[in-house]
Image: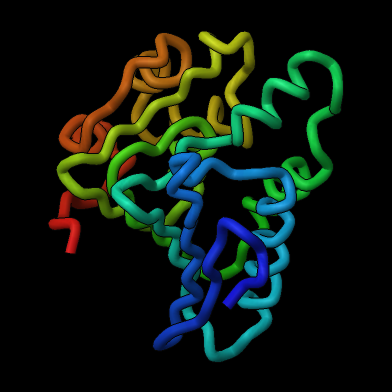
Length: 185
């Protein structure tokens, strides 16, 4: 299990499970969490007993994306984009083992972007994918402006990334982001 607050990282039956556990912040990711996730992925990629990485949320939320408090500090000029975040984002295309996501509830910002990098994505009927980049004065992150149109076509990618319209589970399946809708259990 990970010692990083907000994460539960362990290996079970060959699956490297990365669980977001900050229910009081809707599982929002802090900068240091990105480093812990990247380091865990690197170690699991080198572990012969691990066959896949599994991302999962908790308490009915996948992740609300970046911690808004840290985000506000960066936006006000108090801090630059964290090396933690950049290192994680740069590592995503280099992950060697399959990545699987189990989405229940909100997947906002990096929570949705991460799904574009996954090999398989399962969602519950309550899943809601959102990318509020433009509303926040940001450009889409982590190659999402390249990956989304390839995955779902330019029109749906524009709707998700530029208009910021939420995709429910059914629309996410139709768009090709989610493989299948499953029960929360």
